[in-house]
Image 1 (cartoon, rainbow, N blue to C red):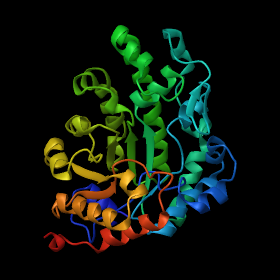
Image 2 (cartoon, one colour; image 1 turned 90 degrees about the vertical axis):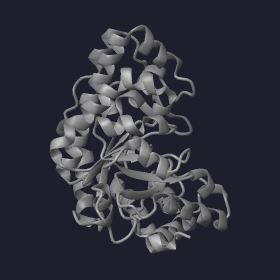
Image 3 (cartoon, helix red, strand yellow; image 1 turned 120 degrees about the vertical axis):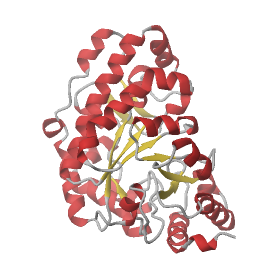
Image 4 (cartoon, one colour; image 1 turned 120 degrees about the horizontal axis):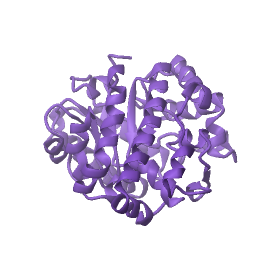
Length: 345
């Protein structure tokens, strides 16, 4: 696995082809996922290693992608330690009693991965036996998980989270520090079970301006990346609307920064700095809605923007849209695998 195209690209090395995988490739648009999972709640599905293994494998079989990402969710650790988090269909993570006071820190006890989430490591071990490609483990970044705990559900404006960040920065820092420790424990368990890379999802990082992110959030991101550095696996940072944070992520320890479709890969490389890989950045809306000729053109534009430089993992700017035709994703994989720098006009 260490010589795979995906891991070589993450290390900034030449690869036999541009590797490709898709965020949210497992589930959502796949009919086999819907048939396999049925009506089981996602948190309950994750607790069944055989089921989670099958769901993780499905896009690898169908698309021929260069990496698998563990079928799980960023709130699994805080759910497992009993904070009162659930995932409701059509809504997302909801919290029975949102985080509001210093006393709520007591509800965020340390994660004992072996005792609290043994099913995650078991799923990883099962996958490593079957996968022909590397497995990516992941965790939610402290700010993004905190936003769910503080708001109590998905939010568009993060009023309570921002209020706490600005009015009680000490409590906010303690919350993010506690969540960083939980993320480290989760990621270490996944890597020790066999995951070959990790991705930190700071999905809602784009809600903050770069100065506030650096002041209030980045220390916890650095803590997570430092906490897994000794494991020697590639560390990927990802977020939505976060083009202004690429350099900060790289400085905090990310080996690869995931890029949304708001900027080109060429500009992303400039912002992230020399030696940092890039992942992305095809518009997921176009993939889900546009005809093939548009998708093909946009795919080639992404590849051309990278200019054949090593250290590029092809992906979407964010996750696969539910309405996406799986055949389109398969065609993208074939196109990316067959592309060479000489194709640049």
